[in-house]
Length: 279
Image 1 (spheres, rainbow, N blue to C red):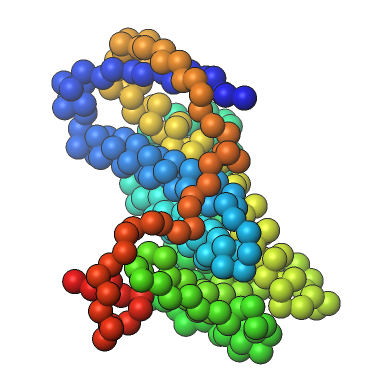
Image 2 (cartoon, helix red, strand yellow):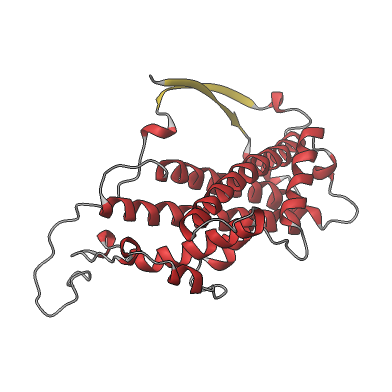
């Protein structure tokens, strides 16, 4: 069944934005930009959780796809938090936009402070994903994950176009080690095997992602609302508003990201690697 809801459009006079001081203008633009990026990555994460096929190949491609989107969203949440710290929370005296937050939004901000920390950042499930699963970040101890490797986890799949290739072994080792480490810090894993530890870590990370997402969007909304109200002369009612009905929007469970793409057959060349297209 299609979903119906409204989107409220507020039209802001360009001069209203031009009259904002640089600091306030940069703050509201930063919050809006961060919000938009988080929304896109949130949609991708929801879609990536939905499977589109069956069998070993699809399962492995699905796992890599979901883990990667989780990693990207986690990194963006940390960058959003860093932006809030630098542009709002380090202000002394307290930034007026922080002071104007509602009680509910201030509770969300306090929760985020407790989760992320400021300087230095706290250890957390999401920080483990951010710092330990990117090949360019900290080295990750792969010993336990390697010792527990199964034949199913050692697969690699090459293709005529790199978009359809999947080196499952590499991502399986990295994310298995990272998610198991997350579980070890939060629950008693002494009686779990590597697969169970990994699943527990995935569940913990997804729960943290949902909670951090919800509270981050609430805080961003509160900050944006204050700055726009300030720019609009004290009330958003002063802005030109249009209610836009949206019909037919799919439920998140109805959309899935494809695992593979039909890109067309590249010209055959016998002396190139099979997963690198000829030029």
